[in-house]
Amino acid sequence: MFKIISRVFLILILIFILVFIFIKWKMDHEVASVTPLSMSTLEVNLNPVVDKNHTFKKLPQNNEPQHPFMAITDRSAMHAGSWESDVHPASAVTSENIKIISRRAGGSAARQCATFTFIEQGHPLILCGGLTSFRLQLLHKDTLELLAIYDLPMRPSTFESLVKRDTDIIFTDTSGGAYMYLDNEGRAVLADANQRIRRIKPKQDGQGEWKFFEIDSWDMNKYVPNDCFHWNNLFPKGECDGITTVMPDYNGLLWWVTRNGRVGSLDTKTGKVLSIMLNGEEIQNSFAVDQTGAYIVSDYAMYHMKLLEGMPTQQWRFEYDRGSSRKVGSINQGSGTSPSLFGDNYLTFTDNADDNMNIYVARRNTLSSNEERIICKIPVFKKGYSVTDNSMIAYNRSVILENNSGYTNSMIQKSYSDVVGGVVRVDVREDESGCDKIWTNDLKVPSVVPKLSLGNGIAYFYSFDLLDNGDRLWSLVGLDFETGKEVIRIPTGTGEAFNNNWASIAIAPNGNTWVGTRNGVLNITEH
Image 1 (cartoon, one colour):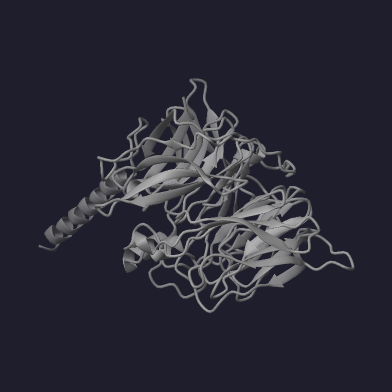
Image 2 (cartoon, rainbow, N blue to C red):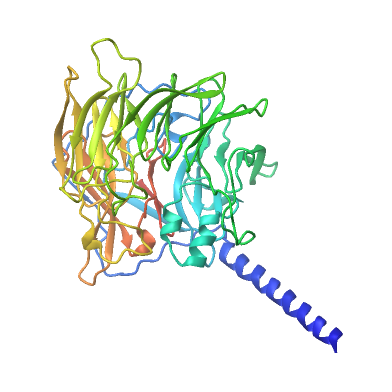
């Protein structure tokens, strides 16, 4: 009798394992051919609208130097390059003669695609998040056909959110690879959820087929505690931390930061790791790099650090107003912007002040005897409804910022009428005596990483219109850099599949405009 029960038990376990494998395969399996995103409301006008009286004007190139250890600036990272300026030289879409191709990512469970880079051949190398894992995907630049995939480990926060039925846990975790970059050898460089810094490269074989290959990796568990709630660790007792961003220094070492405030370096030639701890501070944003070091914002302060013999060393620290609580439209109680560099010596970021968040512009390098670190502190948007969790466009002497107040995430957002909206441009005065607001626009921008196209002088955002049935019609919207006037609106689709949900816009070197969405990607091109 015991043998029979044991056999039945083993058979049940085997069936359970096989069912689990099948379900996971079903969720993850993604075919190469394109499945378009599905609209929830079909009877809508999708015709683009372009201001016939507007003359598109090319803007001068910014003076961001090419980082020696990153791919060409406009295709190397989510925020365009090491300055995190979100500025692209190419001319993005400007006409009514456009074509939109959408691709649903994932298997039975859709994946959200948030991060875009572009390899030398022009194909987008993107990162898409899902229930089972983060996934690198290489898509064909014209057809969006899937050329190759590479699965990364499942994040502990994803498992925890499923168990606790709280999607906010996912969206307040920026670790696991979202802030990857493409290096000068065409390798995706990232830190995965298992605390490994990895370099992964897509290559073509002799038959022309694309495949991803891990070139090398470094185990960081010795330096970053990883005692997290997970399927194989249901009763954690220690610290759960995660590497959020990896970026290269100009000397070839790798900077890395963690959610719990660790800042470190990795020598990829020797494997040597050095780090410091910002006690009690959290780092959820990516960071900027120039020839003098890294610019890192925590939920308490803005830092400039250098690597002195590999050791992160503070050059200056500026503590900002972090407010009294986390606001709706942000992921923590602190600045929601990655630091952005611009001009000859400028740095910009925001705070989390209670009534109105402020845009700061600072001098980033060594001060002369008559200079102060902060050039200006400008309150923006409506009192009590002023917050962002996306970086600014930073160009020449100008900063453009969106207001994300009222938006949470697509899984739990109940009313899109709560999205307050607003876009502002602030300029540094020529004599650096302060800053001035140049224009404002009431455009509702829930959550996108915006982009400035120097090729046509347009700042691109992702917005929505509420339909009579309560659905949302999503659109790519272009504002004139000089005036802030809306000059182009390209409807993309209806429903949550077309919601960008904190993902980014990307302008490819050929001018094609990409948008990450809740269920995949959009590619907008001109005929």
